[in-house]
Every structure is written in C-alpha cells, then in structure tokens.
Image 1 (cartoon, rainbow, N blue to C red):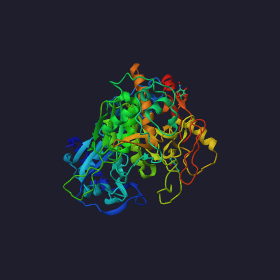
Image 2: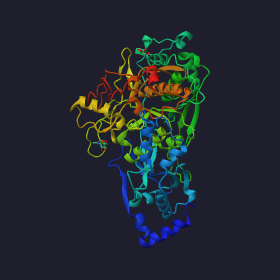
Image 3: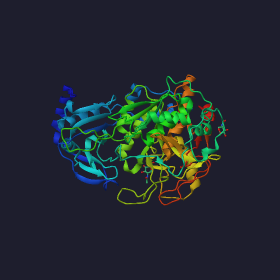
Length: 589
Ligand SMILES: *[C@@H]1O[C@H](CO)[C@@H](O)[C@H](O)[C@H]1NC(C)=O
Ligand SMILES: *[C@@H]1O[C@H](CO)[C@@H](O)[C@H](O)[C@H]1NC(C)=O
C-alpha cells in the first residue's frame, strides 16, 4: 500500500474534524464543454464495468522554477546558457508536493483504489495511471462517461462532456484524462497532403546531380523540392556531420503511420545517393506498430526529409500506438492513448533524448481543453530543459479552417490557433514556396494563442508586427497571445517515395522536418566543438541568431473568410523570422 501508518493517523484526526464523505463529496467542476465537440456524435452510455486507464496529472510543485530555469539555460546572454538539466534534476522540479501526494492518496483510499489498480507512475510521480472501471471513474469525477463516435475516422471513444474533482483537490491536480479531450491519435490532423497537380520527378537522379557539392539552387526547386534543393537553399550542402555518435534526430509519428525502410532506399537512390544503405531506427511507444507493408505519406515525408538533410546523423522514428477500437467488453482493458501525453511522458522517462524532435500533427487549440493543453505544454518545457529542441508544424489552414466559430456556445468568428504550435515552449514552423525569392505559402498556419500569453522572448518582434497592423482584424485574434510560427521553410511539392512511387506532397509537415534537420546539423556543429546542444531555441533565434534567417517579405495566409496576415519585413505570423541559413546560423550559435 502507498499508505503509511503516520498518514492514517493524520487522516483519522482530520476525519474527526471533518467527515470523510464531506471532504471527498464536495465536488467542483474542473472542465466542461457546452456542446459535443465538432465531428463527434453521442453513440451510447459507456458500460459501467468497462475497464480503462485513467491518468491523473498531479500539480507539478516547482513548475514555475523549472520554466524560469529553462528561460535562463536558453538565454544566450545568461551565464547558465546551454547548461541543460539531467533527468533527475528536471524531475526534482516537477515532482508533486508531498501534500498533493497525500491528498490524492487519501482520495484514492476513499474510493477503494488499491495498489493493484495503479498501472503506472512517472519517475517524478507527477502522473499516476489507474486501471479502473467506468463506474469507479464516474464516482471519483462526479460525471457520466459515454461512448462517442467519430464518423470520419470510424473511431469510438469513451469520453465525457464535463468532469469535476473534490474542491480540495483542485489545487493538487492539474488534469485528468481521458475526460473532455476528444483528440485521439486517429482523429488528429497530419499537416501534409498529396499534391496530384504537381508533376513528380520520375527520372532517377544521376550520382553527380544528387551529391554535387554545389551552392547553386537548381531552378526546378521553384516547383518540386528534393533534398538537393533544401541543402542548397539553406546552405547545408558542404557541411559534413562529425558528432554522429552522440547527436540524434527524432520524428514523432502518430495516426498509425509507418515509415517505410524500402521506400527510404528508393528515395536515397533517387535523391541522395551518398546515403544509400543507411537507415533509421523505429521505436514503438504504447503499443505502436511498425507495419512495413503499409507506408504512410506523413511518416515517409518526415523520415525521408530529416535523413535526406541530416545524413549521416542517426534518426529515430517514434511510432505511437492509437487506442484500439472501443469494444464494450469489460474483460479487456482499453488503452486510452491520446496524442502527446503518453508520448511525451515516454520520452521524458528516457535518460538520453534526441537533441531535436519534429512533429507534424496538430489540432485547433480550442478543441484541446485548457488544462490538458497547459499540462502538455509544461511537459514540453521540461523536454526543453533537458536540452531538446521541439519543432511542430504550424498547420495547413492559414489563420484558420472551416467556419472558424468558437465552441463556447457563442459561435463568434475568430482566427483559429493550432496547438501544440501555440505552446510557447515549442518552435512552430510555417511554410514557404518558390525560390529567388522564397515567398509565404498560402496555407501556412499562423496566429496568436488564446490560451498562452506572449512570452518575453518574442514581445519586441510581435509588438512591432501588431503595431504595424493597426486595427485590422481587431477582435479576430488575441493580441496578447503567444504568436507563431517562429520560423519557416519550404512546404510545397516535396518529392516523397511512397510504395515505390514518387509523389508530390505539401504542407507545413514538410517544413518542420526540414528546419529540424538544419538545426540537427547545427547541434552537430556545437557538439563536435565540445559545446552542449542548442535545446529550446526560441530565446536565441529572437535575439542573437535572428540574422541567421532569410526574412520572407511577401505572401499571406488567408482563412476564416479573410485575406489573413501578410508576410513582411521582420517577424510575421505567416513565416515567423524566416527560413534558416545554416552558414549564417553556424556563426551565431
Ligand atoms: C488572450 O490571451 C491571454 C493570454 O495572454 C488569455 O488569458 C486570454 O484569455 C486571451 N483572450 C482571448 C479573448 O482569447
Ligand atoms: C546561402 O545560400 C543562399 C542561396 O543559395 C545565398 O544567397 C547565401 O549567400 C548563402 N549564405 C551564405 C552565408 O553563404
């Protein structure tokens, strides 16, 4: 038992003063939706004996200190710059306060949760996963779970429209899931799409073409993108990686998308002949699979372009398992994998983490409950404090897709920021197209968070833009929110081999792996000169390294029935600071 006798005595004294039933039955709402999230339908009541996994996120006691530390270790002007935390040091910050642990454990005891119901606990003890019945969870959270159906993906999930916690636990628990976050690994959006109108290159490149050490950008790069285009455009062609025994690049994969090894060889044969014979490794997370008969567009795009630029840096593809289809069979435990939370806790549990990780998935911020988004964003801050740079695609719908209406019952029209791009502790990547000059691509996601405030590292850049905008779009976006993207890269006409055939693929999904690979090479440069990895780069790129980017000054990102924001001189919410110039950045990092 988790229960110590001292604690029992303490509790008994407490009981005398305040009856237990009162203490744990005094519930207050934690989060609720006014309507069923878009795209979902109520299917049926959840069977009360259905067993599922419930994650409880305890308040991370010193999270503010962790964030302050992150800001120091990523500030190029600070003496602690580059002094990343070890796993143990980071865990000391996020471990819950003993009072939180005691309160949660006596709540468990009240509900007869025993040690055998605890499926997992993170190293810091900040997340506890219970394996319990729907009926038990309903009693603990004062709620009713239902089965909801997502017709487009065919998925069925057990969720609720609201949940509560004992009033006393609100200061001890940050989030409980699954509850009101309807995002699932299969319903989330990958930010890539096939582009049948862009004729793919089917000619196999000659050896001289693909390995030529040439600074010139091939003219074809205006329509179709290959690793040779990106290496020339962003000036990595002549760089030879040296720190390949320590430097790593990770690709986070979801949606049961598999990165195909045979396709990668075909890709190398066509577009990066010096890399033929090299590969990547796959790590499966929470029941993720590695089906080599089912290559994914997104997975192949990501891995072909990270390796295509960063070769011979080791690349790791993380295949995160989705929830199995809901079956109302109480004998089988349903795993309740959601995007982000399981994956990020899995990564944080490793003592050695890739120094750069790219993710090409996202959701409209408003569909992610604020408590869930905040918890995940804080876990990203923790990853940053460990010395990892996290890149996320900024989305493919400009300032917002669809009707852009709020889901608070008011149906007001506002630009729709994307999460995780809107988290201030990640680096969001927008899209460009064309060469000489590069211009913003119209789908490039950009905007201002409605959950997270403008972080100090970007206030000057963002204020300049907002001031220049005047009153335009007043009320449609949050002037005090975290603004994104931070940077950008090509996002159109990427040549990707899928099932042996080359196709054109577009999206900020293409941009994020590209920037990730360029920064992986910058890490290689730092690591091979005896320095630490860059870690969380935003304070650096908005200050001393800002001149290492090619400013993109034309194009816009229409959406929500508007013309969207316009790219211009300096930072803008279409292309951020611009596209990376490796040679210039090398001098600045
Ligand atoms: C704007 O962002 C702030 C964070 O700076 C947030 O607290 C606020 O609710 C947001 N306002 C709107 C209207 O979204
Ligand atoms: C990087 O490449 C671009 C385009 O090829 C070129 O204009 C620029 O001068 C290069 N930067 C450096 C530092 O050589």
